[in-house]
Length: 227
Image (tube, rainbow, N blue to C red):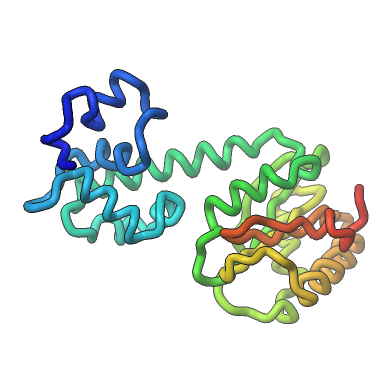
């Protein structure tokens, strides 16, 4: 149904004002940001088609700003609004991790990483640097794309930790297949980095494998000792 055919109370903007943003669907919230559609397509249909085409809100949230602005019917002004809203969401998600003891709640870090990287088409590898109380200092994306775990050098993992004055790290990487089950190579890399960390005095507390289908903590699987 076109927006013009809806009752005033059910139109996205009016519905938001009356019932609050939590009452709106993803498409309705996106329609509020876009404001208007294009010739032959009203804004709600345009928003729903965009979400369907990209694979949903999580995929849209990772879209490049230039890609957003190039989309038909979006352009610079609307694209800037959508990009700004998505970035606010990402920043809020990151800040929710600050102050949490991430070793105690690996699902907190995994939830953020899944939202940010879970639908990547290539493998992404990085670290979370932690303070002495295992609270987040920074999130680092170290590389993306196909790469053998045997090629990953401890130096690239621990350089950022040293710069951050971190006491520990959580290693993470994505599985584009959607299956978070760790491979034998994942386990071998985890042990190799843990050995290097002991020499440097920077503990590797966990290795999270994140994917669209969930996450796996290698510490919980017994690959790393429980601290």
